[in-house]
Length: 85
Image 1 (spheres, helix red, strand yellow):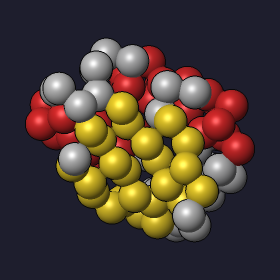
Image 2 (tube, rainbow, N blue to C red; image 1 turned 90 degrees about the vertical axis):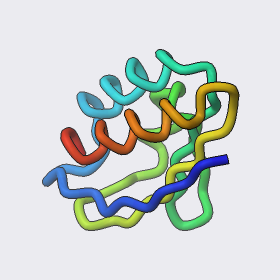
Image 3 (cartoon, rainbow, N blue to C red; image 1 turned 60 degrees about the vertical axis):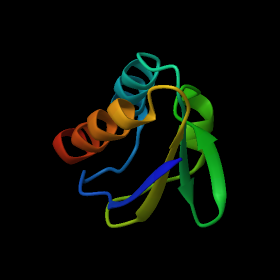
Image 4 (cartoon, one colour; image 1 turned 45 degrees about the horizontal axis):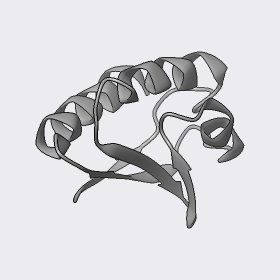
């Protein structure tokens, strides 16, 4: 399992547009990708779950990635967060 922490920089947090893009990105990998905020978890492939976390600008989140391609998925998902969120 790979994990990394990230503080959301997008002014409006994980709202519909970036959440939708994250879902598309997460579906490229076989690994399970989970976003965790304040102990609540949401799979990155489930749009409504992601939006249900209520992630705002400045909120810290932890990302857990586990599965066959976790090395590649971790690297690419971390880059996605840095470039989009």
